[in-house]
Image (cartoon, rainbow, N blue to C red; front, side):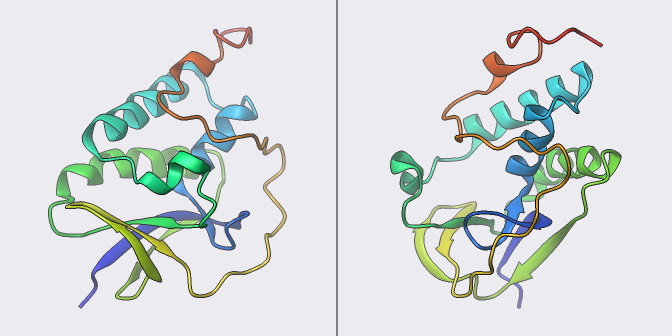
Length: 156
């Protein structure tokens, strides 16, 4: 029986696994590849998840343990539409991605009703990032203040 699922890009990041859907869309945002409407959609979804899910404590120190979050399928139906919208943004910008399922995502270091944080048992070397990807530190809280208009980019 499948216990957990994760949506991620096919490129491998610093944690040695496919970059999660939120980070992959944020890479597009940082690169200035999202339209104003796409950026607003991303911020709305990101804010909704921040309000609706507990933030695992391993993020407090920048995730030095190297954990990856996975959703629990039971009770996650209300997440699906929002996750599909993020997948749509990746598809629209040519970012290959997938939904992975696992009964054993790794050593679980956090668990709540909707998700687990697990340290992967196997890590791969990072792969080349998609062209135009802009890396930077993960931002705690809403990223809305980092939007195109806030950063001084022209609208459109």
